[in-house]
Amino acid sequence: MTLEPLGRSLSDFTVELDVYSGPYEWLLALILKDELDIFEVPLHELVASYLLARQPDAANGLERDTDFAGSAAALVLLKSRTLSPAIDTEDIEDETLSLSPEELAERLTEYLKIRRAAQHLKIRFAANAGHYASGHTIPPRPGSLAIQPDRVSLAARQAFSRVLEPPVRHLGPITVTLQELAGIIRTALAGGPISYETLTSDMDRMNSAVAFAAALSLAQEGSLTLAQTEPLGPLILEPSR
Amino acid sequence: MSDQERKLPSPRPAHLVEAVLLVSASPLSSSDLCSATGLSEPELESVLACLRERYAPEASGIVLRDVAGGYLLSTNPACSAAVERFRREARPAPLSGAAHEVLACALYLGPLSRGAVSRVRGVNSDAVIRSLIERGLLVEVGTDRDAPGSPALLGVTDEFLAATGASSPDDFPSVDSLVTQEELARVRERLASSTTAPHEAEHS
Image (tube, rainbow over all chains, first blue to last red):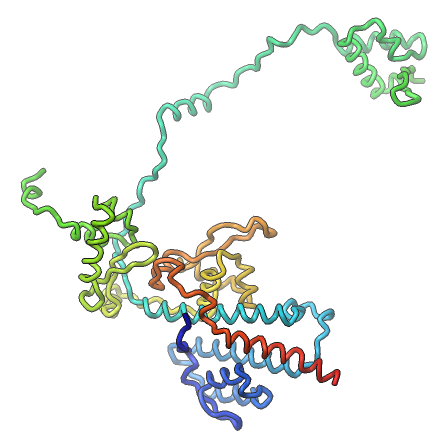
């Protein structure tokens, strides 16, 4: 589907130039179609013509000004791009200037489509203006969320009940403490350095583990030093000097 | 049931649909109408065909519109001057060109972020977007979780569809059909010549 040419706020603006005389919009079309070289169009005369024909008090005065400023800026850009030498993009930080010609063409094409779509929307808005619906406001409908009473009471019980003590029946009685093993280590060290293996030779696994923890604790507080010359080698507990 | 109610004749299906539509300020879907009136889908279709004739623009001061995925009774635009005098309010100011462009972006390229709209238009569009959200024509429909900062994504609203007389976004022509291939080719050629001409001139 293609649309017919769209009405615009500048449709009644005409220009009188040496190279062209007629509607401004047609001038833009001729430039776009390459039927009129932009080099031959004096942009300052265009601006002067518009300032003379400007209608600040018109209902669409601001829109006319905006449209003209936008189109004139596009002409300035087009002319400057045509006149300027090749641009070294490495020196330009501006994203639009660093685009490749293909990317720029793609972006301009996309904008052209959006511009046309905007003009199409403008027509649709105008064609559908003046419809007024009922002023009656419908109260909001109740939601479809179903709450079951038993689930509410369960949630309330869980929210307001006291936190239960964690079950400890699977835990056995405490048979050894860190302090007891630290005392044993201190006693053993009174006779000089001792290896961890010798220290725990007659202990079960529980006492051996706690003895290791007690040795680390005593080493941390500076009561003894731990020495191991090779990985996985014998661990020697020495009294601090 | 009171005596007065007992004397009232049973309403026709068309009257039921008419009554429900009258009190709705927003479009009602077929399922809404069926649910409210107790009519089946085929019965509703038949009734709506009658109502379309009864409320045709040339036949009544009220028109039946098929917009935003539903049906809506509205005043006939031909009577808008009288309605606006009665309501003592002017018609909302028409949207600016920039606003139309932003809406076109949301309609054809959306959902998209504010930054994406600005990139397409080449200018910052935040103020225009804010204005359109206030007018109910744009809405944040989600977030782009893949983009830095998870920006909000914008889409058009049912109010937009109603204001443009569209039943759904599919009612609009495709964006590619709005520009002819010849026009696009001219833009590309023009751009190519404007970027290569000085370069070639330098070498020649």
